[in-house]
Amino acid sequence: MNDRTQLPCLRERFLRRERRSVQAARRFTAETLTGWDLAGTDRADDVLLCVSELVTNAVIHGVPPGRQLRLLLRNEGRVLVVEVHDSGPGVPHVVHDADEGGRGLLLVSALSDKWGVRERELGKAVWCEFGLP
Image 1: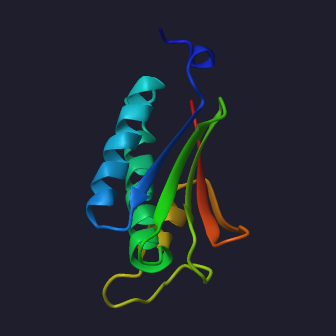
Image 2 (image 1 turned 90 degrees about the vertical axis):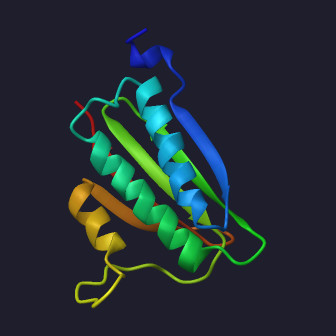
């Protein structure tokens, strides 16, 4: 079935505050892209890298001990939206001159078409969008 309109257009996964959640998020995203017939597109690698960066940031900086993060993937037809929700304080920002690390959002801003941060009642959602063919 190649008709994206017939497929579920929203997928989510809750992940623990642990480093192996980054790999689990990439695997979940790759499976989702395959299911949506997007794995072979020129944006698939960009999506996977941005998922890795956003989940890494949430695990390291955004998820308090004992809590989880939420990865949400939404296929809106011409746009794929990635959201990572966490319950931690603070607003992430792009670091342009970090010696080591701190470049995750710089990559997200370079690879995605748009990105931003949305406040939630508890914590925040960091999102990015990719135009689809």
